[in-house]
Image (tube, rainbow, N blue to C red; front, side, top):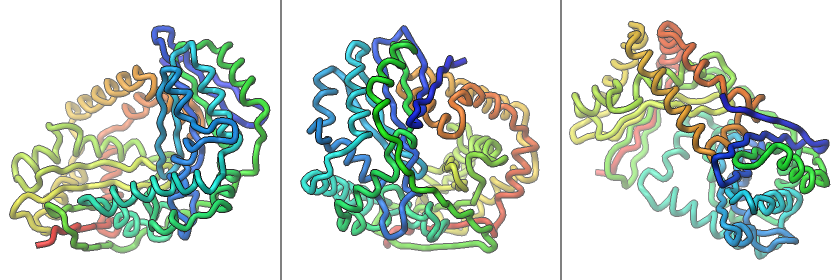
Length: 412
């Protein structure tokens, strides 16, 4: 069991703490409840842009990185559809520097044209490198468009169009910051060799004076039930054809989340899994293939994917995946396979929780979902999935009218 302490400041900042005296380090992790789903379809990529702008300095501190590096620490961040996460790893004797810097940039950034141009250039180059200049780089642009259309999940985190970042103004940036980045829209997770008393002292010292802000209300529309099969075919300059089939599933709070996670493991957890053994090793239809879930907070996707081996056609790939999911729909998973997957999940969870940086971000994420203490319930929740529940999920989800298929063809 992970021992967790929690408290909330008057300005709304939620703080989660876990002490580990065996480590010489402390992780100060800040999660902001803002992701690409909080953008509008004409101004996308802003959450990711801010992942970079937040390192561009403030009126008080020209460089966020320099004080951390001089103190023997490291830092980074990532953005996803649902939230943005920043972390600082510091030696415990220098940890106050992390609290000072995080509070400072939560209060205000250097909203200068120079800072915007520097970070805009970085983000635009990243867009070009990741999406335009490498094989399969724009894959998720097609997937998001096919599965979600104009829904806020309908574009990747990096943005729908490079022009949205190229045309972003200082006023756009300020509006986005003051509408989302605030103590009352953030969760601070402090993990490592630091006591609760010292954590409270430093949090109150550096964050108490920060004002709460008016956060833009989130209005994510419920995705309409898909009534017919969707298919998209594109041709790109890639090494081999890529097959992607996506089924709509419930979100993180839905009753089918854990069954969907379990079924994805039945199909594709390790080299002994059904997808690898059947489609890669035996039939040799794919050079690599997998099944996984997106795990989004809102409605998500269940993926079946594979890169074609020589001689594979769409009909062969389609038939092979259909056979695998029909097996789950027609017969329950064996007790042996169920227990094996439970053991794997428990082992991975325990191992992940031993990595303090992962633990810090996970505690913040579960607090975002409602309670950081839920981290102690994950093994039990996964273990509660029965073979019958998995079968029922498969029968309800793996139907043609709920499927979206992208055939990402290699140019001949």
